[in-house]
Image 1 (cartoon, rainbow, N blue to C red):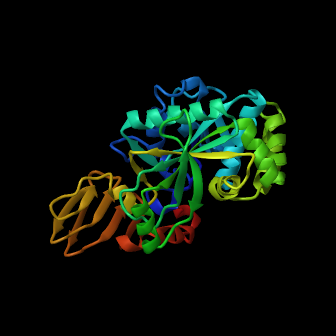
Image 2: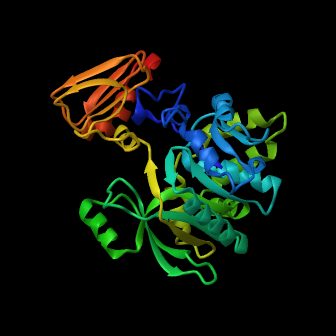
Image 3: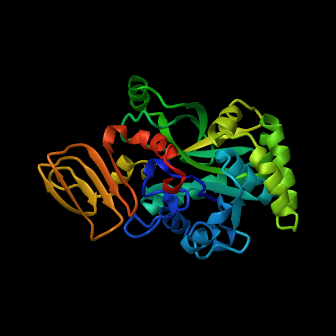
Length: 355
């Protein structure tokens, strides 16, 4: 299942409520969602792929993932964070097939090389198919002491599954000193947001830790595909507690002796394209460190990220350094790269027509 429900407001003004970042073809002419769909080639048959996103985005989702099955779209009436997106998937799959095992991906990551991803995904499926109590997460091998990511610490290895370990602890975004300590230990990885679950076991764990949410999702799943389905999800889903799957279930499950949380280290290039500086890493830098996806004329400009959706619109910059400049048909963003995280707040305060 590919989660594609985020609004991507840190990539405003390119990403909007009506066309969020995962639908925008700005990675060499392709969208993040299309790339995520193709990442499953050779791993999961198209008939077994799902996308969970806002209900109104179904046409765009099906264009990006053209081989999606008729029942492969899970439409949310409103966004309720990742625990509910994953829980909706688990509830619907458990109702269809009591032995369903599924992988969770997000639509805003760039991951390569593909063979390493495929190898780790296959190992994740094998772990859960061998023992349905296992919850599998994937840890990205860190390249630097990042303070903006969560970390997972691996414990002892799992017999019979080379490359898989018990998850020892989850650690939230650390300060720099703690992040450097984690990197130095060699036993920590970045929490990737990729998981493998047995659908029924996920629902059982959800019932133990979030009983109201589990009851609500079970009612939605019972009506799924029936004439009453849209009414039931519209009544229940907006009332579910808004929380991430990491905080809501993975962390408590790591202390639950009825669940075996496992971690698979993944040695890949992994980029979470969630901000303009992160998007900038997808662009080649010139001799002055500028990363551009636009028609530009630069004079004594250094280390800027410049993006436009109009190939004929000239952006000129003189003597500036460390800026993000993004031009669209009806809005332009200028900020320091170090303030790029604040774009989310900026977008939230915009008039509705510009969100």
